[in-house]
Length: 327
Image (tube, rainbow, N blue to C red; front, top):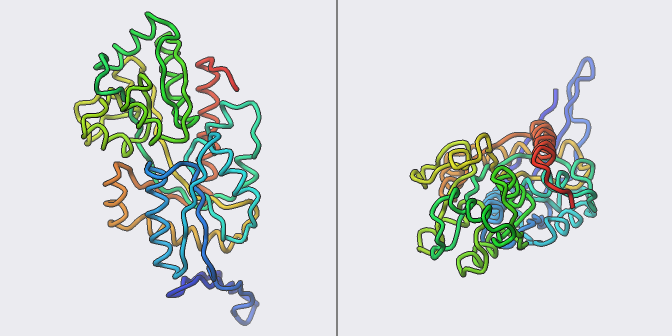
């Protein structure tokens, strides 16, 4: 029988095995953590990924009595953050709070990567699902996704859209393909800078996680045209889904999960996953994530591994079926 126990402070992992006539603790790893843990985030402060990372880091800091410190490493579609984590020691002191872009979408849209999303990392826990929304500046003449796409179809190459990640670009390119639209991508280091430029009217439209868009929408700076979820959102009951807006069958949400470098000790992974899962299943966590317009989506390492694989295959099928050129 194996037993794992979180102490009041750090983690003590003890293995107990049956040796015929007796069961005893025969191996123990050092308490974890004994020093600060850094949590790498591939987006700048302010978006849904950063907010989730800071919430979970705070909860882990309180639980394990050591600081879990969020480090923002935005840019290059997550390549910078991915390479940082992949090169770290697999001792649990460098973790990665990642969205689906670096772990799934990049493998579908790029011909080659400077990291391996499967073999360079250890899955620890799936955490959150975040709905995405498509928005235009408040001053835009377009009031529906259909009217926006009609304008793009009538004037190929005229419209510019902000893209904060490969996933967001994939969503819009798929909508473009279904509406026979050619538009120009303007890359950004995340949703927040993309939406800031959108509100200023520097791009015609953009897509991003709902919690980064809603403050601008409530402030009258942007107008939300559609949501990418399979159903309308309680925060935006009058805003249609993209499936209702000329892209039937399209449903793509963002998601967030926790990873470490490859070859982390299995006992450490299991115990860390167990504690993170406990945090995510608290009613208070559901309320906090809900306040960010997210949905708790907890699962352990094996489920996350299989989920990532299926999501990657899905993204590749989308790229192929939509004839989206790989970069």
